[in-house]
Image (cartoon, rainbow, N blue to C red; front, side, top):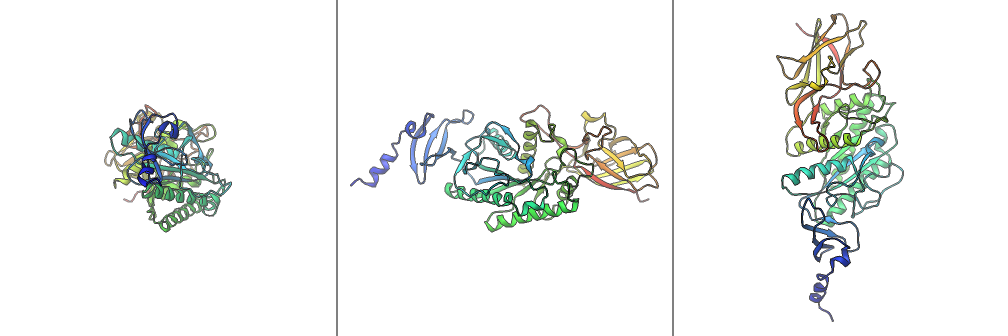
Length: 435
């Protein structure tokens, strides 16, 4: 009879080349349900320990901390991706169900699995994880593991996501996170949930989209609570679809939710107008990376219990030709120098009987968190609306962006153009200032 000691010795003398293939690996041994070994798989990280299931599958880095989930749910635009592997291919995964980073798009039902699968391309969620890992690597900090999955549905309304296959598959991904964490001996944690929906909804009102998104966030939180998981950060996109009308309800609904919170941990890292789009209204590859970097900045701030908020217009009052727009902002406002050719800075007045042209825009010298506008003619006697950074406002019908941001900036990995925290779109009643 062969002793257990002899069996263990045989298991611990495995040949890496025979078991793992042609990789630079050594010290291969069996530990519990895993094969563990040291290898040089990522030149940027140097030698470190990795795991692989004895039955096969992708290699997973040995990493500290929880197994984090960055998940998303929404319409088809959220399913876009950048070509190529994530920068940390052994730290960023999808559930190992052979579906990939983008889910089944509401076409079939996914089943939970405890295995992990390397990504073939980088979704928005994977780019967030990649950015967070890059910052930690530069700081010589611990590099955790991430599971990402984007679930989408062709249903045009936000409320439809509450009952469709996309929602079921979203929680299949959550359960896969839990099973994989259990297998790795880790705590599962859903770090953030991206919701990019409503922009493709052309039939619902602002209040219907607001209520649908509230119900969706509440139902997600309830499902996570039932599974013993904490509430996530909800990432909203604050944008309309291609060719959206100036009063597109999704933009205004998400701005309002981003300001009110309604008991949820909601953040809008940057409004949609801040990023380039292709001719179909989808983010370009560079824009998708910049959007993910902004989401990563927001996540990093909020998980460190710091504040993060884009400037948000709250109140607009006029006195004859002068308008004062008060913002909620973390830092003093800036009218971006690159956009000074737009004298209105992204504002427009609508709903008046006579044309009310904005001729100057500047930061209020008495309040760095307010913008002073001046019109060519008196506003008195009118009851107009003041719109900021809403689509469809240019004379040629093209979407118009805003020029207002705060003083925060950061360098982007893929572009020489700095990242900024741009002001959220808004539509405000323009009221006469009290005397």
